[in-house]
Length: 397
Ligand SMILES: [Cu+2]
Image 1 (tube, rainbow, N blue to C red):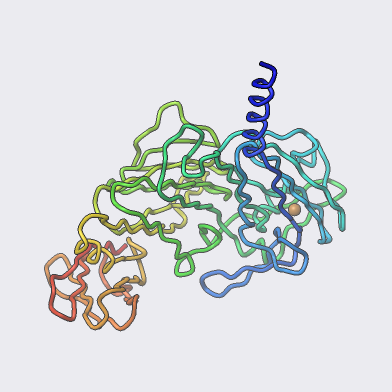
Image 2: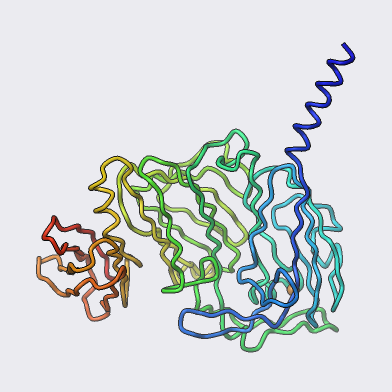
C-alpha cells in the first residue's frame, strides 16, 4: 500500500512539474526608441527592449506563459527617466504591481525582477505606470498571454480553435512625441497637451503598414484576442459571415457567450472573440477609434480576413484569387490576385459601368479610388484563360 501511495505521489509530482515552469523575460527600459508610421513619420518612442543593444519593440513584445508558470520579468532601466512595469489584469502583490503610489519606480540604471504566478489563462496587458498617461502614449506597453495547458483552447476546458490572432489597439499623437510632456518633480504633476491622435494603430501599425491577415478554413474556429491600450474606445465591427461570439473578457470566460456583430472595447479592456465562417470569403473587420468625450469616430483600421474552403478545390482557388483591403476604402485599395497573373482586374459601379481596370502583373494590384464617388462597387478578377470571373464587393467611403 505504501508503495502504491509513493507511486501515485510520484506520478502527481511529475504531472505537476510538467504543468509548471519558470518563464523569464527581459525588459530593458529606454526613452530613445523609434518607430515608423505609415507616412514615414518617425516618432520618438519610449519602450521596452529585449536587450540593451537593440531598439525598443513597438508595441513591446508579447509575453506568453502557460497556466501554472512562475513568470519573472527582469527589468533594467537604462534611460534617464523613471519607469515601472504594471501587469494589467494580473493578480500580483503590491511589490510587483508597478504602481508608483503603492510600490516603487526604477531610477536610472536600476534593476528589478518583477514576478507573478500565471494562475489562469487569459489576455492581459503590461505598461509603464510612471506618469502613465505619458509613458503609455510614448509606447511603453505590450500584451501578456497566459495559455492553458492545451494551447489550442481558449481556457482550460474552454472551446478549441484551429488558429489564434492577437490585435492590440492604440493611437499616437505626434505632438506628444515631438515634445514629450515632462514630470514636474515639485508638484508631482504632468501638464499634458490636448490629445489629438493622428495615427490609429493595430499592433503598432496602420494603413498600408498594417498587413496582418486572419487566415483560416471554413467551419473552423479562429480565436481573436482583442485588446485596447489606447485612450479612445474601439468599436469593432464583426461581419455577420464570421459568426462572431464574444467568449471571454478581461482574462475570464464570460458566464454565457454572446453572439455579436459589434464589440466595444474601452481603454484597458481585453476580449476573446471566436469566429467561424461556414463560407469561403475574404473581407475585413473594421475597428473604429471613438473619442470618449464626444463619442465621435476619429479614425479606423481594417483587419483583413480570408477564409478558405476546405472542401472544394476550385472554390479554394477562386477564393485565394481575390482579397480586397482595406474594405471599405477611401483613397486606395489593394486587390490580392495571387493566382491570376496575366488576367485583369476590373471595378464596376452599381450601374454596371466599368470605372477602372488594370492588368494583373503581381500578387497585389493597387488601385487609386480617390476620384470615385462614394458607394458600392463590384471588383472582378478575369483570368488569362477566360475562366469564370471571381467577384467581390468594394465599399468606397
Ligand atoms: Cu516609463
